[in-house]
Image (cartoon, rainbow, N blue to C red):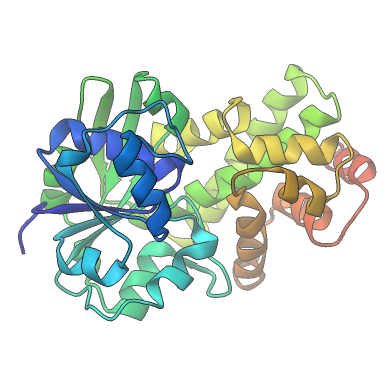
Amino acid sequence: MNIPGRIAVMGGGSWATAIAKIISMTQTNFNWYMRRPEQIEEFQMFGHNPAYLSSIQFDVENIDFFADINEAVRNSDTLIFAIPSPYIKQHLEKLEVSLKNKMIISAIKGIVPDENMIVSDYFSKVYNVSPNNIAVLGGPCHAEEVALGRLSYLTIGCICEEKAQILSGIFNTRFVKTSTSTDVPGIEYASVLKNVYAIVAGICHGLKYGDNFQAVLISNAIKEMDSFITTISPATRDVHGSVYIGDLLVTAYSRFSRNRIFGSMIGKGYSVKTAQLEMEMIAEGYFGTKCIKEINANVQVEMPILDTVYSILYERKSVVPAIRKLTDLFQ
């Protein structure tokens, strides 16, 4: 296996575009899969993604674009998937080319709906990719700040430490610092949960709870995250690392956080459906809430924050009493 070999960015959204910016600084050329041919045509014409992070200019002469996922996979060695988790299945269902001899990097901070699987497990169990050939990309890193060239930190997780080290080099730039980890499931579950907790942080912001309460909320969210991850994937890990708590903090507090924005709209009185319709991007925490709730039905971790978010999003519980009941549990 040639690692990293020819790299492909898989996806045409904001996070995929931010990753492509990073890759363009470390690779002479690379492949890029987007499902819509018209998006590719406009990109090649104007030198930037017409739909997302259009301020980033690319040298399109150094990029080979593909609207056919099979051609993209066939012509690549390392595939960086940055497709929102609700859509990953429908993209992969078109795949006829084997992934067995490819290096997979999941930059998807979500869970596969209906399957209730973290993305690494999905590639392993459904597409027979060896866990040694699957890596995950995590850390507190908003696409918008990558577009601005602001200092960011990423962690590459792979059970093969040597491959994690090699792959870290393709993301290491003047404004991106990288580290490695072998805790693939821990990173993935943390990246799902932080979206859930960002939604409740947004709800409380919309209800005009202040910074004092937000600090208590996130402190309890950290404990809840740690309990769940330790139960679902026992391992030696420090959840105080940036790939765990750091990602939670930036997603809960940042103005760029779509999950926080989604939650804030609900706190201000929007219905779940209306908030989803008005947002231009996917709030993955909506789907993650249901998936983790269903997974937790088997492991039975005490998760009052998750339960509260689920009751608001899926059981249509009234927001004010649901949050007030949650506040009574905190100290």
